[in-house]
Amino acid sequence: MARGYDIKQFHDDANLVTYTISKLNELLEIEFNGDRFDNMYKLGNSSSSPVKVEFISYLTKSLVLNKRFKLKGSNVYNNSDLCEEDREREKVLKNHLKEARTKNHKTYINNWNLYVNGEQFNVEDVKQLNEIKKREVERGEVVDTSSAVEIVSAITNCALNTYTSKN
Image (cartoon, rainbow, N blue to C red; front, side, top):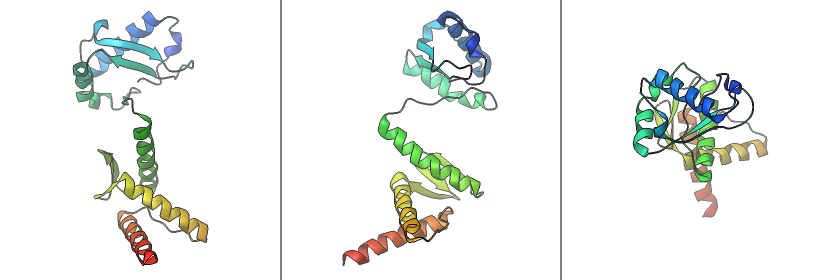
């Protein structure tokens, strides 16, 4: 997808396709022509609307994904089309990623896992953390649980509290 380029100037699909292909060729240093794409269209009417590019084959998509590091610093980015369940999982992880980064923790997401200061958390861990935070807020206690140690501690405490309350 591309943002930031003046895409509004294109009044027809042929110009949009030509421009997008030339931009991809320039940034990725790949020689594309129109036969590598299944479909290409804008996702909105504003000049900053992204362009969705659908490739004709997985091989072409892989070629672009392998060179996506060359897009860094440009206004072009790529996102995979995700099902609703995966979009929700990504949203949960990204919310905690942003929160941890505001507190200067080293964080990243890889293979549906959130890494905070070297500690790995899956989506279920993060959802448990959300529940802990929600309960703390309901009790009027606000606990900073953004660091990895605090997350592990909070999840462990939640599991222990749940276990002891059942027995």
